[in-house]
Structure formats: C-alpha cells, structure tokens
Length: 369
Image (cartoon, rainbow, N blue to C red; front, side, top):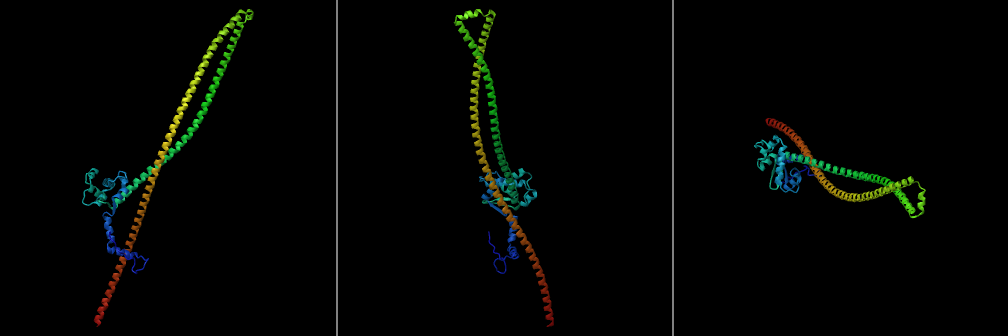
C-alpha cells in the first residue's frame, strides 16, 4: 500500500474538482500504469477465510470445512474444465497445454493453479481478472440452481400440506357417509330380524297355549265325554297338527338361539373394529403432527438459507455496480486526458511557430543594426 496526494484544482479552492488535472497527475505519477500492471497480474486477492466463505459452494459445499488447499484445487480444476486453450495460454506463458484432464491432474498443485489463473499463498489467494469473472459466473450458476431447488422444495411442501388438508376433509366426509350407510344397513337388518323373531314368538305362543289347553282337558274327567263327540279322523288330524307344532317349536327355538348368537358375534366384532379404528386414528394423528413439525423446521431452514443467498447476491450486485461506475469514471478520465494531450500538442505547435517568428524578427533586427 502507498499514499499518493493529488491536487483537486489549481486555484486551491475547496469544493472544486478538475478531472483533467487529476487524470494528468495520475498519469504522471504512474498510478494508471500501476493499475494496468496489477490487472495484468493477480489484481484480486482474498484471505483464506474470505475465499472459503465466498466460494465454498464451488467445492464440496461444506461451509465448515477448513481445508482451503483442497477447495482451491477443486475450484482450479473446475475453472480449467470451463476454459479454452487461448484463455489458459493467457494465464501462463511457456507452459505446454495439457493434452487431457488426466494430464492436468497429473501435474503438481502450483502448476494446476497457474493453468487456471490463480495462486495460493500463505495467507491469501490471488486471482487473475478473467479467472475472477469465471468464478463469479460459476458461483452465480450454483446459487441459481440452489434457489430453484429451494423453491421446488417449498412449493412441494405447500402443495403436500394443501393436499393433506383436502384429504382430511374428504376422509371426514367419507367417514360420515360410511357411518350413515352402515347405520341404515344395521337398522334394516335388525328390523328384518325383529319380524322373524316376532313371527317365531307368535308360533311358539300358539303351540304353548294349545299344549296348555290340551293338558288342562286331560286333567279333567269331563274332557273324556267331550272327546267321544269328536270324530276319530278329526282327532287324528289334531294329533298330527300337535306333532307338527312341536317340531316347528323346536325349529323356531333353534333359530332364535342361532340369531341371538349371531347378534352377539356381530356386536363383539363391531366393538373390536371400533377399538382398532380408534388406535389407528390416534397413530395417524401422532404421525401427522410429527410430519408437520419436521416440515415446518425444514421450511424455516430453507427460508433462512434463501435469505442469506439473497443477501450475498445483493452484495455481489452492489460490488459489480461500483466496479462498473469506477470503469466508466476511468474511461471518462482517459478521454479527458487524451483531449488535454491533443490541446497541449496544439499549444506546443503554436508556441513553436511563435518562437520561429520571434527568431526571424530577431535576425531582421540584428541585420538592421
């Protein structure tokens, strides 16, 4: 570093800046030439920490890695792969161009870095101008891809959350419809069973009442006289009817017992199914809460990463704008300097002509004397 004092104007007045005068001082002091020489060499210099923090995305992607040499080697290889032979020859002179990527990998670390247009010192990393441009372009590409990945993940998470909510609503509506349909089916089933049970109970009651009546008549002597009046064939028909009724009663009792056991089995199966569905529902709710927490944490992390990437991109854009402004200022100063040089040459020619006229006049005066 060095300090160069420049006069802003020739009148020694504050608040007045004469660009032509400043450019002339810079040109005469060799500052512009020093800048050109510096840009022809390694004008950009980063400390190891700054270089790793800015370009770690071009290496392994691990920001916590402290191996700067490994990062520089990986970046140099990437720059070499994306460079042409003319660009490599502009970085180094007198060095043969590698025949292949294996030939490049076979060279030592310093030679590989020189071919890529960068060098690594003890405390700093030195970059050529075109190498810096390539690094910035590669970094912008990686950051753009990362932004696309972040957007894809966030949009997928939002869509999955929306679809999950819609599924929950549809599942709730389906559960309500299924419950109503099953209740209706059960009511119809039990109503049909009730009709069967009522008819069976009526038949059993009729058989029991007939048997009780016949038993009562058998226990009373007067029933014998009444039987003598009943025709024999009719009495045989009544006995057959009684036997048939007894068989029907047995069949109906068996059907009632089977129906009762079937209803009991159905009730037990319904209770088991309800218990299983309740446990599954609780498990699904627990998993849903856990997935929501994980998704929320992942989304927050991605948003923080996006914010940091946007901040770095903003800083890079500001730096580029400042460099463009400085380049425009230097171009304007160069144009002014060229105009001043042309004006000085014109003044010099005019002064030479005046000196010639004065010399002629002096010679004439001398001859007259």
